[in-house]
Amino acid sequence: VENGADDGVYTVGIDTTYPPFEFQVGGEYQGIDVELIKAIAENQGFEIQFRPMDFVGIIPALEEGELDLAIAGMSITEERQKVLDFSDPYFDAGLALVTKKDNAEIASLDDLDGKVIAVKSGTTGSKFVGENQEKYGYRVAYFDDSPSMFLDVANGYSQAMVEDYPVIAYAITSRNLDLKVIEERLTGEQYGVAVAKGEHGELLEQINQGLQELKDDGTYKEIVEKYIKN
Ligand code: GLN
Image (cartoon, rainbow, N blue to C red; front, side, top):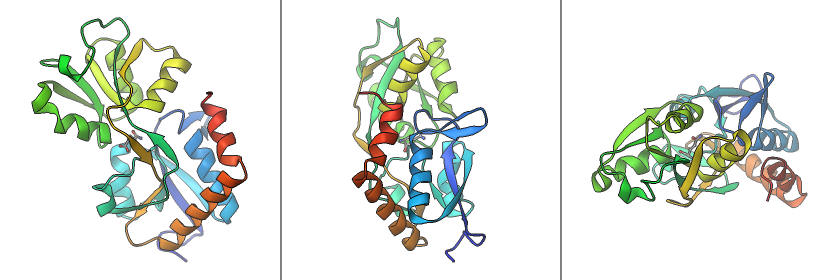
């Protein structure tokens, strides 16, 4: 039995709310990440239970063994690879720059001097914004979850935010938010399933194998297209 799954059930960390990757409808978890990891578990014959949490808590929870794995729209980064192992990439994403729909003042990062930009704690967006703060001269407002951040910008408190492109694109279309994307790709990123470093080699192999089989048999495509229409 692998470390952490003594009861034969792997605990899977997901972001509290991150449509189209994870969200709850009537108490049931849905979304691309949720369906994908369920399908992988079924394909590979292991059991899972979901534990939603703020994104910022997920990596520490993996390190402490509170979670066995996480699928949370989590980008594979070199920094994270110091403490985590990732599966093969399963989705292409990247950061978008977003403002309120009627904002005519801000067309790029260059227009953010003295403005407030909203980010979600612990994310690549938060890192990007921190690293570029001096260059662009904005202030940063931190949020624990994406919906609160979206509201802050839609209500005109923060003047801009960064969010993963597929997430904000989905939110704008499906919820008709008063927001617009002004730059689609500040960064290029790829999502991976994460486990604590060096402790879950066998599980990771199963995940990669399951992912490949779901790609080969069309299930992967079906899951993605259920949520993202081209
Ligand atoms: N992809 C981003 C990251 O890995 C955001 C993830 C999220 O907010 N769930 O940091």
